[in-house]
Length: 419
Length: 216
Image 1 (cartoon, rainbow over the protein chains, first blue to last red):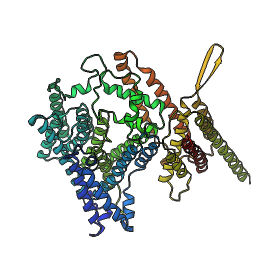
Image 2 (image 1 turned 90 degrees about the horizontal axis):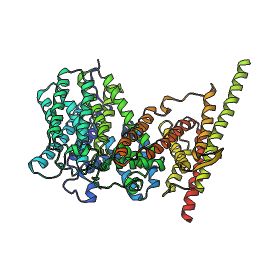
Image 3 (image 1 turned 180 degrees about the vertical axis):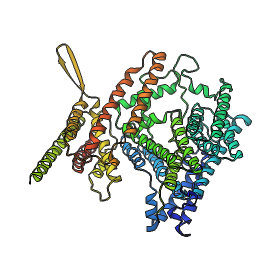
C-alpha cells in the first residue's frame, strides 16, 4: 500500500522551490473564500464586477506565475501542470466563434474571462495543491466559502427579510455557485470519522435546502450526494446521507409555495396564469432552434442575447424570464455551435473519467474521500448547469476549482513521484 | 523477392487510395465553398480570425500530439462552418408526381462517405492512435443533451401551444448531419497532407470572404 501522506511533489525538493507553491496556496485559498462574497461591495459597478476580489487574487497569482516562468526550472514544472487538451479545445472553439460575434468586444471580454480562469486560475490551483496537506487546505477553503455563502443567504432571507440570496442577487446564480460547493464539502465531511465535521455537513445541507430559491440547488445536491451514497462503503455515511436528504426534501416540501422565491415556482411548467408555458422552456426551445441555422458557428461566445429573441418562433406572452434563468448546456451549444458543445462535453467526460479512475485506484479510505467528493461535486455541477450557467462571472471559479481538484488529486495519488 | 513485391503492391494501393480519399474530401468541401460564396446564410463578422486559424492549421510543428489535435479540431471547425453555409440550401427535382428535396450538404456528405468507405476497406491503413480517436463519449453526451431536451420540450409545447416537434426535429436532423461530418472527417485529418490541403482551401475561402466584405 502506498504511503500517500509522505508522498511529496517535485516542487518540494528544496526550500527555495517550495516558496512558489506556498504563495500559490495562499492566493488560491483567498480566491476561493473571496468568491463567496460575489461582487460585494460594488455590485452595480461594471468594472468591479469584472475585477472582483476573487478575480484580483487570481490576477495576482497569474502575475506570480508569469514571473516564475521566466526561470527555466519553473517553466518546465509549470508546463507539466497545464490542463488537459479538452480545455484547450474548448478555449479554441470559443475564440474561433468570436468571428461570428455581432458585438466583438463582448465576445472578446468573454474569451478573456475564460482564458483567465481556465488557464491562470487552473494553474494557480494546480500549483497550490502540491501535497496532501495543501489539498486538505483547499478543501478547507471550499468549505469556508460554502458556509459563508449559505449563512449569508439564510441571514438575508429569514433574519433581515431582504429579497436577495446573501451576496447573490439572483437565486439561479446562488444555486449554481453553492450546489457544487455544498456537494464537495458535505461529501468530504460526511466521509470523515469526526462527529463535529459530520454535524457541520448535515447543517450545511439542510441550510442549503432551506435557502434554495431555484430547484437547481436541491436537485444538484441530491444528485451529488446520491453519487457519494453509491460510491462509499461506510454505512454510517450512507445512513446520514439518507436522513439528511429526507429532512432537506421535507423542508422544501413544507416551505411556502406561494412565496416569491419558492423553488416550486421555478420548476412549474406554466406561468402564474395557468395558461402559458413557463418562459424558461421557451428559451430552451429558442436555443435549440438557433442550432438549426447556426449549427457550426453558434451566436459567438458570450453573445447569445444578441440572437436568441430571433429564434422564439412564437413570442412568449408573459415576459417573466429572470436574469440568469438559462440552461448552461444549451447555452454553450447555442453560443459556440455543435463543436463547442462537443468540446465542453469532452472536458466534462475527461474529468469524470479521471475522477472515477481516482476512486478506483485509491486503496486508502482517507484519500478515497477526496476522490469521491470531487466526483460528487462534478455531478452536482452538471445538474446545476441545467437550471443556470456555470460560466457566469463569479461562478466559473467553482467549475475550475473542481476540475483542478480532480486533476491534482490524480497527480498526487496515482502518479509515481519522480526522483 | 515475392514478399517485397507484395509490399510494393500494397504501398501502391495505399498511395492511390490515400489520393482518392483526399480528392473526395477536398472536392466535397470545394463544392460547399463555391456554394457558400454565392449564398451566404451566416454572416461572418470577422473572417480575419478564421483566416488566421486556417494559416495556423497548415503549419508543421515539431512538437506534435496536443498542437496537432488542436490543428485537426481547427480544420474540423472550419469545414463545419463551410458546410453550415450550404446546410439550409436544397436541391429540388420532380420524380413522377413527387417533388424531391435534398439538402445541398448531403452531396458533400456523400463524397465524405465514399472517402470513409475507401479508407476502411483496405487492410493496410494504419489504425488511429488512442490519443487521436474522436472522444465518442463526448459526442454521445453532446447529442444526448440536444435530443433529450427536444423530447422533453415536445409535450410541453404541444400542451400549451398546440405545436411542438416541428422545429426541434429539423434541428436534430441538422445536428445529426454534423455528427456524420465529425465521424467522416476526423480520421482523414490524421494525414498531414490532407489537413494542409484543406487548410490552403480555407485560406482562399476566408480570404475571399475578408476581401468581399470590405468591398461591400
